[in-house]
Amino acid sequence: METNLLKSVVVALALSLGTNAWGGMATLPANNGTSTEQSADRPDVMPQYPGGLEALMNYITSEMEYPDDAFRNGLQGTCVVQFVVTKTGHVDQVKVLRSISPELDAEVVRVCSQIGNFEPGQVDGKPVNVSLTLPVKFKLESNIPYISEELLDRANNGDMEAQYLVGYSFYHGDGVPLDWLVAKHYLAKAAQQGHEQARELLEKTKRYLRNELD
Image 1 (spheres, one colour):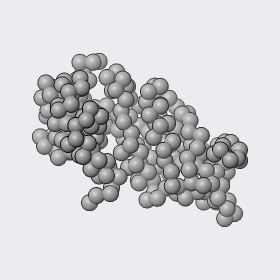
Image 2 (tube, rainbow, N blue to C red):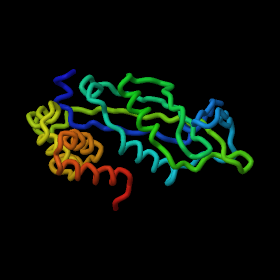
Image 3 (cartoon, rainbow, N blue to C red):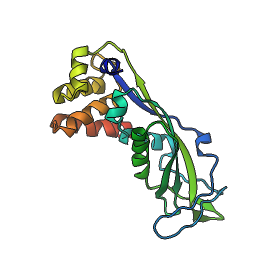
Image 4 (tube, helix red, strand yellow):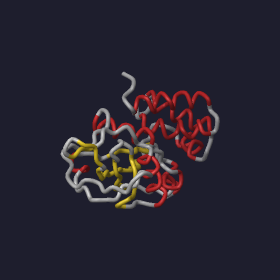
């Protein structure tokens, strides 16, 4: 598995979203630190994320990282997570309903816990807590022969400059298919090691993923 992953180029993190993802709302106690009010089974108005489901998908995709151990072990699949959007618009009580692995589950919980600024759901014109369910899909693709195996090998084994070069290539579509998700993965690794150009390009990549740039 290790050898195959060293040849892997695409580390694509995608989200599967749809109206059905917001169904099946269970009654859960939502403790936001001030109360233990239950979530509404059938709110009159569902919680709304600014910009809708696509904007929420873009936010989560831009913030999610593929954990190193999961990447190297070829772990992938769909994690189903549930959380409560409180009557103040914050996310509370994030829990995994369908697991992939501890490291991937933890990353989904981490990112979902940071989501905020929802317009809360309503019942009879008053804000209420509402439980939502969301599938998050991690996917690995391999054997796309556009970048040399030697450069990928260096990048996947921690070489900061190689990580930057691979990220730069995918950011610009230079010799490889343009893919900001893959670019973000490698640029983040280089930025964590102090590569300033990678850090700057990583921030721009995140802005593109959030549709903040034309």
